[in-house]
Amino acid sequence: MKKMIEISLFTFTLLFVTGCSPKVGSDDWCTDMKEKEKGEWTVTQAGDFAKHCLLK
Image (cartoon, rainbow, N blue to C red):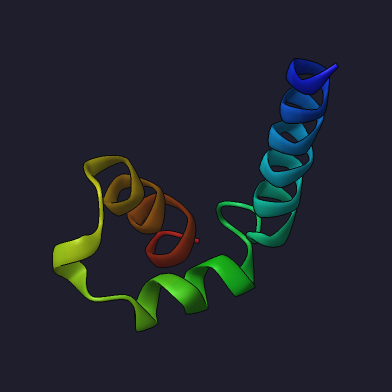
């Protein structure tokens, strides 16, 4: 029973966190990335930013 509660709580938390972030390539995502320091970007994020925000 305890294991089932832990799994449910983990699943809820995961869905809550991913549900709050804007979709990659959206205007909100581009704005968030512009405000984020460039040193914190991953290689994937930098590529997505170039593709979706600069080359629109």
